[in-house]
Image 1: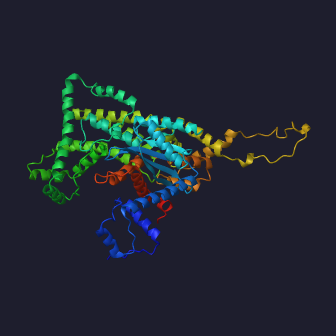
Image 2: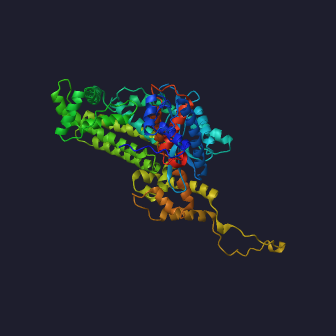
Image 3: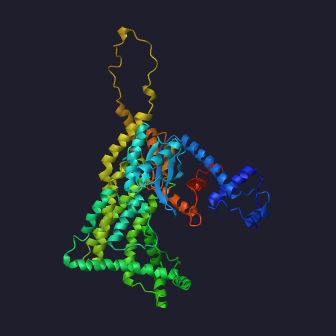
Length: 592
């Protein structure tokens, strides 16, 4: 039974509910214009005021301004620094837009994350264009002087972006370091690494979707030159007489993936075969999964496609025996798929771990990346140590090395704040950097960098009550040179500011299940300066995925049947939608 709609609230509030509901559900502004919809709502209560398209347009604009003002007030009240993600997107109209998200840790040690704008590009997707767009957005919210860091993908334009932003902010007498405040999207680095591996194996994803301009622009300009050399070097270690056999094994790997791709496509295109596969899954007590296709722009879609097929391999084998039109996957081919999944699974787990938006990701990203590098090294070594090494093994070794080299190449360009975040993680601190080979190499320099950043915070924020001099009576000239403390030791300032660091580093570490921000909430008074550092740094996302999530929403708003939306309307609809879905909904939208 449907409950009667409560319209006991005043008319203004009811209209707000309706308009925000339109935005939340991505419904057109003309939703209420037809008579049937009006009658449907009137059936429950004829007093419900349903807006026309023009009225909805005006009300959405007013609602956007109210919410935007609330966002501004919310950000201005926060005392810590802000981190940002920004990325570009092209919709059905091929026009570019920039999605911007903000991230910060509030006084209650809660990580806040939400969109602040979805702005149209002013023309060419260039570093200068991005810099001016970002600056205008940050200045509007009055937070352009409190930037902790900006996370972007690895496109060459973003290096120019941070450089140009530094110049713009310098005119406002604001310091912005284009190196230490520029954070590379580590999920994007993973993607580049996997694409290199799949390319070497000649495993190309299905070209069913066109890449966007931004996704094609994956490499920095200097790397493009390096890759021209790298591609020729892949076969350097293989004798000439083995090249032909090597290339045939590359084709074998490629053919296996293509065979599974075509098999799944045939199943998807036939309702009869799909139902038979579902029945086969029941016979083998396997969970049925809808056959997936992969996309050229998403490497993990290839993993998902192969993984779904591998989980249903017994059912698929039985299905292929039933239909002559389906090509059966051989047992040796399934073994190869299993090996591919084992290695791609490591990448996917790391990608999922570092792409969160509701928890701290920066320290975990450093650990996850180095664990992945260790795993690639280990797999290459284990394959190389096999007594009987076949050509597929040799291809896998080269592929692992290729992926490792790509990871290292980009990882080495990351700034030291990534490592400093590890010390700010109370579960790790500096002693955690002594647990593995890779972390021991980072220990000394990371600790030095940590101390230098701490010193900056100490000089800026520390108020030592003990050093405040009371108002002294004027001394007679004869008393000015009398130093009654000449025999006593005066503590050096360096000793004072090192006390907090030493205490923090020497105190026991909590266990690995500890909530980082909850721990800091309970211990902020013990380590006041380091706590300030933690609030500013731990809010920085390890990836630009939060900005990319805006594009999923944008694709639901700007559709083939709704592609004439003006820039302002698209911006308003997406921002209202994301604000209503954020954890700050009550403060921004004033709706419970």
